[in-house]
Length: 257
Image (cartoon, rainbow, N blue to C red; front, side, top):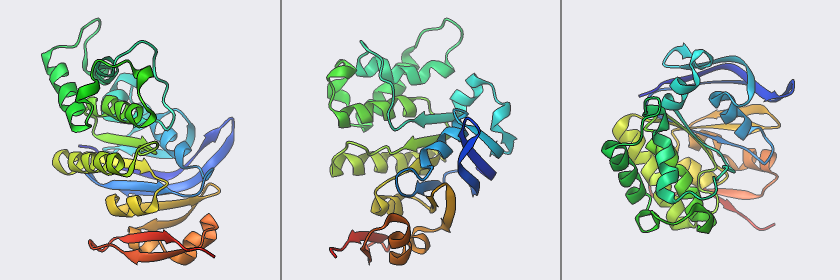
């Protein structure tokens, strides 16, 4: 669906670069997780891809500069879930998810049966069917997070940008959400870029990791290569050991000092 390439991308605000010289190429259907300590520049990099944050370097989607796209074209191609989304007052879960269909509608057009079907399927897969008529303001933090993802998935974009998508979710719903994203990208060729604090989950779901610290890329590669005890100690100031899950992925476990 979408191939993303970053060429020496630096991004920031008001002339100050928060993240610097990021180069990566994501084939269609791949998953890149951006990891790093708080304040490393992870979210800023996602915002640069969406056009929210100013950047230098090149960001290409299917070989074309993303900066050359109109806002409507970008909304069809890129789905973005921010870490702290603005949730409009008065909308139900279904109403909010239907906002994801807006880029596909003509001028002054209203949602049709096909749009409602897309949203219905997304809500069911995110375990939100029983909340369809609930106002967003009445939801728990975890439920609201899933509703935000429902809006993004309803866009049916080829590139998904997810900023800490498991924030506020218990382990079961976090796993279910990431499993859903993983099935989508495998079935539809959707390309995923996410930020994740949980290093073990990042290792389980992402094909490749970029470790950023103080705005600089310090490691790029498969999870087993990037997640070493020494590297995590250096950049997270954490004492950990690395175990191996049954599927061969690394498990990052804190160790008391």
